[in-house]
Image 1 (cartoon, rainbow, N blue to C red):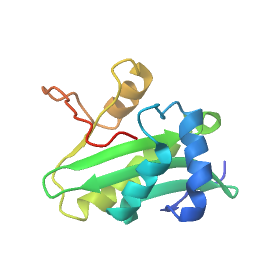
Image 2 (image 1 turned 90 degrees about the vertical axis):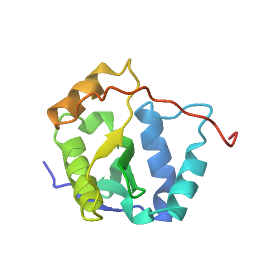
Image 3 (image 1 turned 90 degrees about the horizontal axis):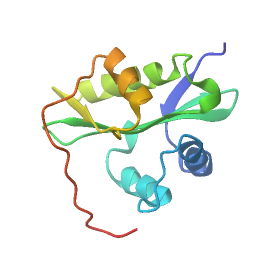
Image 4 (image 1 turned 30 degrees about the vertical axis):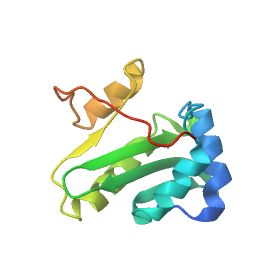
Length: 141
């Protein structure tokens, strides 16, 4: 197995990253993935990471820290490379970078129906918080 190269996202990665997200079932009609990338590049772009192997993008993760909590979004590993430690490596790298900013806790959200991913995060030490996730769309994509 080749080593995963984890590096910051670059604009030339856009098409490959969007295709990765589509293969992983992360895109939704109400979230334009290209706009999500554009927005991320305006705020802490150094916490938007991609995993590369054999010259191709096979993983991604967006991290953030607003001074109170860290956040994880768009963790994706190409289905052909899942269960090989790639997701764990991506999470370890983004966690390290967020922790270096002084972050005391990271939050993330997972669709309740995505039980396999819930089990993955539990293996990494994440637990269900006794909270209700709420959201409000401010901009229609």
